[in-house]
Image (cartoon, rainbow, N blue to C red; front, side, top):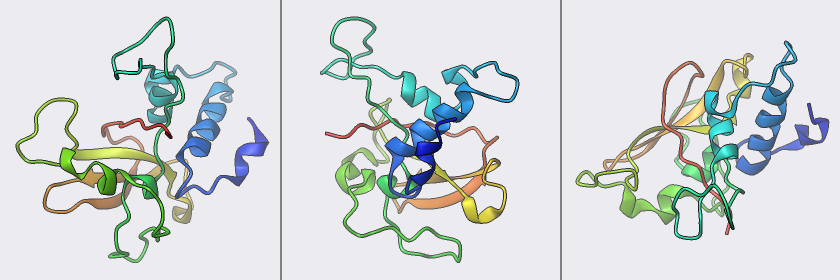
Length: 160
């Protein structure tokens, strides 16, 4: 476990969160690494595309994808007591890709439904069981903290 990654700002630094999560699952208690496809941050760590966004396995592949932190997904007003308060200057998916949240959109280039963030729910007392997710919806997106056993989507991002 890489102890230098303890200083992530969990609500805004998805790249650091992803590295921390991958480091954790790379050295589980049984000393057998958990394969990337079995957890959301691992899916993003393993994701590779070419410059056009197509799956890439050889040549010049973009490999710096990560699971976004909750504030990188959206900045929502603190509507519920345990809501995350995000800095207003953070770039986020809803602000930059709002056109993908469309009721008439189809396919994997659309953005609607619930997706995991890399932000654990630290205030729960059990961050190993609870994390934040974003429900992208044309009528207004919402953030929730949910049990990690729930099956939600994964949207990997990368910094430009």
